[in-house]
Structure formats: structure tokens, C-alpha cells
Length: 296
Ligand code: SAM
Image 1 (cartoon, rainbow, N blue to C red):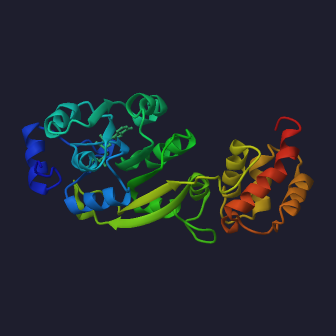
Image 2 (image 1 turned 180 degrees about the horizontal axis):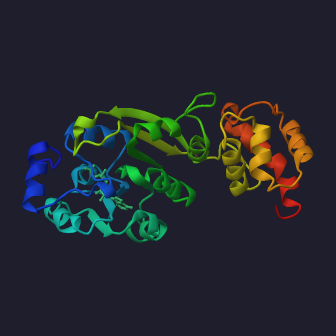
Image 3 (image 1 turned 90 degrees about the horizontal axis):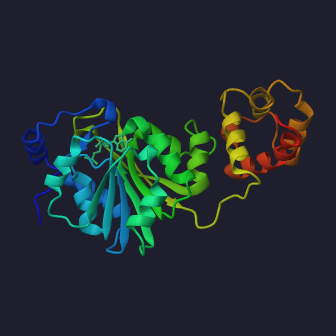
């Protein structure tokens, strides 16, 4: 087996050999500790039957671990300068395919159909570029891809929000957006010292396993998310005030909102952060008819 890329010495050698300089704007903080990589891959529950999608392989530190433990890895890398580096560092692995593309612009379903046909167990595993953590996660979840789940490193503050439960300060529309699709667990916190260069923020690994059956059934997903976001618009305001301010577009819908809250058995004086995902589902269904009789 080749020497691990993820050691301080080998990483420095690779960077020097290719004259590579980090681009902060692309969230380039490379992992230099093989133990962390072993833990990340073990949380993903990979087997020789698993297909893995990686976002941002960098110089291949995580990619090689994924390749050793799975059937095939497809990795999206936005930075063209890394392509010759990856061709060099990963040359020993025949089950890795690198795609030079911004993950946010990629047609991931097409890539899955093309590269993973016949593979039924698919995971996303990545040390995400932190400047786009949320858009990447939401894209991968909302596109309803045939994934078992995701194991992803991100800034700890976002990890806290994603895995937060009702009644806590971190609970908000992001918690609901992610937990609507997955069981979200923060499985590990990661010190700054395992990166080169060290990021300014703390990091954590989150495991998201997709629900086999939806946790709630709603009439209209887009409206459910709209109601959720509206309810958290001003955290210190009550759910009633947030809905009036955010949803009504200046129209008088006070009675309809009070009726819907009553129908959903939610006290209008509560704050959004106390509502469970089931309560948001009941509320958005109760609000659906009054808000869809005529355009808002
Ligand atoms: N996986 C490597 C590791 O753990 O050492 C590098 C992780 S680094 C935090 C993030 C990587 O994502 C960088 O290689 C960066 O160039 C890449 N990246 C940034 N934005 C991206 C995007 N929109 N699409 C694909 N890759 C991106």
C-alpha cells in the first residue's frame, strides 16, 4: 500500500513538488492526520460494494482512504490546479474518477447513473469546503439522489445547527431542512491541528442517514420549508408575529393564521424554536388552503 498522503511531511512534499499554493477562497484546508481519515471512513460504513461521491478531493488525502475501502470513488474538484496533483498522488488507484466541476453546478444524478450503475449502496463522504457547506448539503438532499447518506466534515457551528433539537439555541430552519431528509448526528469534533493550513474555526463530522420513510408527510414541501423559514425569521418573535410579518405580503390574514395555529394545536405565543418537525408539518398543512386559494 502506498504511503499515506495525509501526513505533514508527505503533504509538504507534494505541495512543493507541484508548486501548489493554497487558495483560501476555495476553502482549501487539507487533512494531515490519517487517524481522522480512518474514523471518517469508518463512520460511513463502507464496503467493497459501496460507491462513494467525494466533494473537493484536494491532494487526495481522504480520496485514497475511500478508494481502499469502497468499490469506486467519484470526486468533484473545482480547482483545475489540483488535477495534475491528483493524477500523480492517486496514480496507484484504479477505482477513482475525478471530475473537474463545481459541485453546485454539477448534474449529480447523471454522474450517479453514469458511474455507479449496478451499485446500490451510495454514500457521500467529504471534508467540505466550508464557505459553501450549506448550499452543498441542501443541493444533495433536495435533489433526492439515491444515497444511503452522507458523512461530512464542516465547521462546528454549522454541525451544531444541523443536529440541533427543538428548544435549543442552535435549532432553526437548517436543522429542519436537514432532519426532514435524514437522521442527523454529530459524530466527532475535530481540532484545528489536523489541517494544513489550520482553519480559523472548529470542525466537526456529521453523519446524515437518509430516512427510509419520510418522518412527516406534507401537502407541499416547498410551502413547508417556506413556513419553517418564516417562523424563524426573527427568533425573539412569536410564531404568530413571524407568520404575519413573513407570509402575508401585507394582506390581512390574521384570522386565517390564528385558525391554522388552532387547527394545528399550536399556541400562537410560542416561538418557532420550540416547534418539532411534526408540528411544523401540521402547521404548514393547516396554512396551505388559506394561502393557496389565491396567489399571495
Ligand atoms: N479532501 C481534501 C482533504 O480533506 O484534505 C481537501 C478538503 S478542502 C477542505 C476542500 C476542497 O474542496 C478543496 O480541494 C477545494 O478546492 C474544493 N472545492 C471548493 N469549492 C468547491 C466546489 N464548489 N466544488 C467542488 N470542489 C470544491
